[in-house]
Amino acid sequence: MNLKNFALYQTQSYVNGQWIDSESNDTFEVVNPYNGKKVSDVVNCNGKDVELAIKAASEAFKIWKKFTAGKRSKILKNWYQLQVDNADDLARLLTIEQGKPLAEAKGEILYGASYVEWFAEEAKRNYGDTIPGHQADKRIVTIKQPVGVVGAITPWNFPSAMITRKVAPALAAGCTVVIKPSELTPLSALALAELADQAGFPPGVINIITSNRAAEIGEVLCASSKVRKISFTGSTRVGKILLKQCADTVKKVSLELGGNAPFIVFDDADIDSAVEGAVASKYRNAGQTCICSNRIFVQDKIYDTFIEKYSEAVKSQKLGSGLEKGVIVGPMIEEKAIASVEDVVADALSKGASITTGGKRSEPGSLFYEPTVLKNAKPDMKVFSQEIFGPVAPVFRFKTEEEVIALANDTPYGLASYFYGRDYALIWRVAEALEYGMVGINTGMISTAVAPFGGIKESGTGREGSKYGMNDYLEIKYMCWGGVE
Image (cartoon, rainbow, N blue to C red; front, side):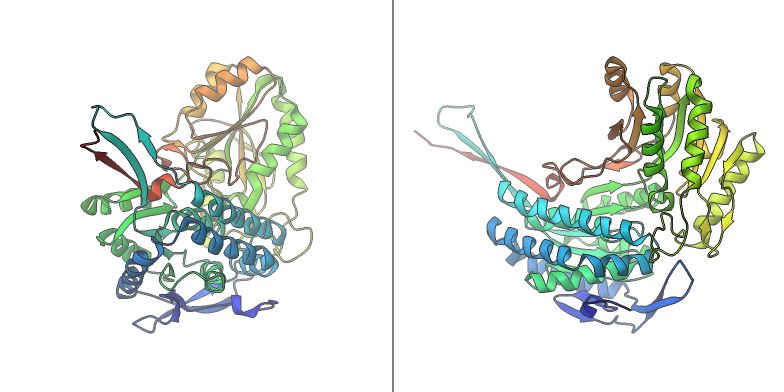
């Protein structure tokens, strides 16, 4: 592992300020998706290990919640600075275990760190209220207090940013955390734990459990009465299971689940700008993002022009090792991911779509799939209803505003959406009509720490980022003072 700061390369779990092995002494392999080679063996925890982490977090909560907001803020700022200072190493580690190009990986590190910086400041703005009393001798005050121990379950596609986006507001609010990163990308999480240790967090405030026993770990976190909040990013199917498991202990739950993002281009749009936005939105991380464009709708008048320009732009996407200069698209994460992409492409072709570029596996490795554009996509194809999660862009034709709104909203998902146009009246109508938690208008890039990230319908509940991002980690306490005469 070629790192400047080799201390970032950790393979044990992190509990109560200590690097630990599993109670079972079990391990699992982490594999580089670029070449299929083993990167390392990582500790494989079980339910008993999780219970130890929950206990450590519960004890640490008694201490951490009493820290002043300023003191918590200072430690969070230390953590932020350490992430920025070590961004090159963190990015390299991320690329090796996840596959995305190095420049993109470094972008994720800095993006993730920005949440830590943001919530370090928000820690000091956790305001309550005074409310006019309902009787002359009564005074009403509200305060906000941390919910308690938080279980955070994070995915492989953004193994660093998905942790900081959940953990930073939790820590800022005064909560402690037990993190279960994806078994496909645990090294990025453990590197963040090493930096958290250096930043000065008390033992037990941050705990990271690595395991390939996802169902077992999730069940223990959901069943524990000491865990008062679960935050999960992943599939809608798993999110629903966790939501059911949390019912018995009535936990707070935040879910960022699947997406089926429409990308609409109206006749009056700047086509070149729309092409650029669609490429950026669709092919980032080889299309393996929950907010990437899943269905591209182009109005009839400009459909052929858009397809031509878009296909040319997509052809220029260079594939290869994320550590190689100039690479734009890396490998997909594992075999079943690329098999799923092949299935939806085959289905589309069988129902009348045609390929303008891409459409098959590619060198330099078995997990590479060419950036693909599908022309003449139709609503009866899997690419319309199924989250593709790969570098395949189906392009649908539409005639009217009413038609495309109906098509865009014809999905149980409601995470991100995008559209390009210049008519300001249309922009307001479409933005209000789209049934999504986030709308990008004349842009394909919407993620930022200062805005609320999250979806509606079966794409989840809660928001991450912005001034709203701490709400799910806080309880509001109402105090009624009587006898004030």
